[in-house]
Image (tube, rainbow, N blue to C red):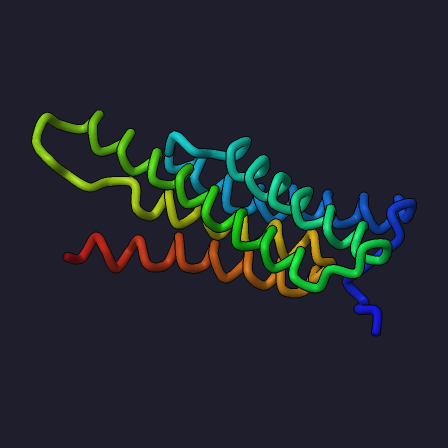
Length: 152
């Protein structure tokens, strides 16, 4: 039984919509990070989300011919792992720049990169409602809870 998430490889309108949505949801988080002068800003988050959508689109476009139900799951697992390494690099970079002593910084930026990838996966699957709601909730968390951290 074909899923609504699959599409024909020559369906340019669907492909364009999904990739533009990935850029948009990545930009929502990226603008917030850019305004806070974080190293991973607008372009980084847009590219992470866009790349995740591209990787997601490949098994969706080819599954009709190959009928491999596990392909999408493996791609999503690979994206989550790969983006985790990118986030780890962000943590190490910020920690080493601040001081000579051991200090962990950049966890929120690393988590934001990871969320950008998840939003890109949602966009790549055509789950535009999930992508938009996820981006708005992420923006809410990044802005509102920053105020709570200042009180500590």
